[in-house]
Length: 188
Image 1 (cartoon, rainbow, N blue to C red):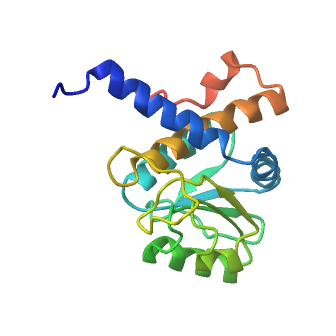
Image 2: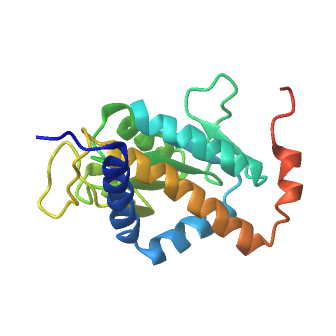
């Protein structure tokens, strides 16, 4: 049996991404943008590869002039009622992000859960859930299956969703793409 080629695997991954991102509700994305643009600061929390995707999103949104912070960074300010915490967690049950969400909720911050499991404990405190309905470690019945290992499809979809939202914010705010470079790191 012949092993699949790069092109075949590439097409498989891109096909899965197309299916997963098409399953995200447009109304949820519009609500996410409204929350982000009406918040003073945007905080992000996740673990593992999800946190890597969130770091990339935080960086890109900072290029749009949005005040972004990663939970745990050395210069992280105090979260307030004027802020939003974006929790990236496919299952919504990862101990650290769920615990941080509880603390942020007690401080009055809005909570947005970007994940796959609509029945996690985060549903009780989240102002909004943006559901990327792909496979989690729980293999829920209505999740989109993936041929990729573990939760790769969620992490990839999360990263691309962040870039899609960035482009939508650019359009909504009518930002000049060339002017965005003023927010880009220049100590390089």
